[in-house]
Image (cartoon, rainbow, N blue to C red; front, top):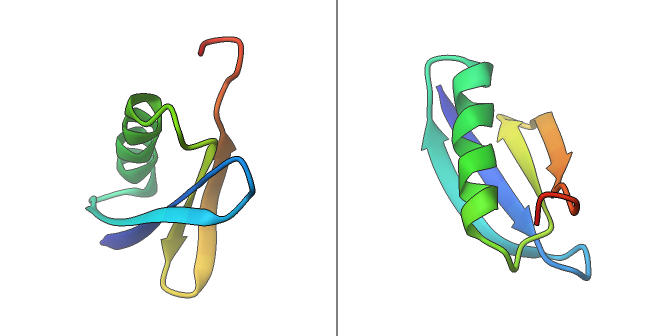
Length: 64
């Protein structure tokens, strides 16, 4: 399945869009979480499948 991955900045504005190809939602979440960890300038991520938000997560500030 193809997921749209939206990365948000400090102003809650979409700063980057990526597409993730994954077999399951859990696989897509794993990929998106890894990408968020690598992008310190992004604060949270949303995964969309079609027109439905399938996942949303904010950066763990304690881990940063």
